[in-house]
Image (tube, rainbow, N blue to C red; front, side, top):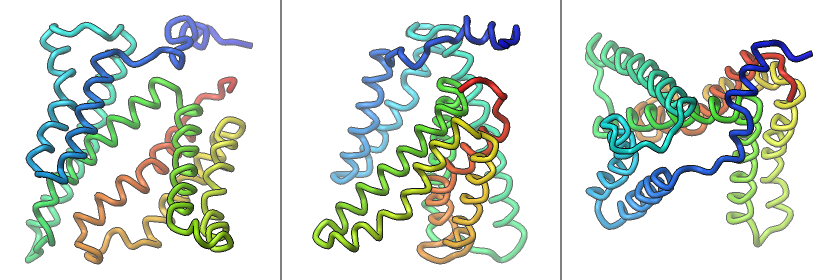
Length: 242
């Protein structure tokens, strides 16, 4: 039986998956990717990525770009607030860590990279969860993880078929959890949280190894963050029909 709340959500936000990104969003994405690719020439081109990332938002706030409806604007504002909460918390923790004793960070120039990673990742994950819902977004994130793992294994071990098959085995849990996220979201969410926490401990992301804690944390945000974020969203997911 469909509740009044679910009926309102369905009428207001229904069939959003079939919508295509706006032209401004596609152009901005191309600028971001182009800026990253050009960093091989000079790191000054990272500013081009920044222009693509924040430019459309600035134009929308100024009222010069009107390519989003009310739902998309609310989702973007909520994602921005989530990004603020996560990044602000990280800033306070880092300030306490560095000022509470004689602690020196390795590669302090990577702090900018860390905050950019936190902002971008949190905003993107929150936007995907708002656009697709916890189940669909988590399923697609997990499928993306699994496919990337398979592609990496094939590129690294394609000359040794047996070794490639062995290396591809760790990708199977991602596909299994992607399937479970639609049928048993809370169970899949709990497993994702445990998997993310286990990965964080196994790779010792809190230590000063492999370039220092700042570099380690950036890696953890990109690798562990999607698992923990998807897991938390699934645990809190409504018992709605898949």
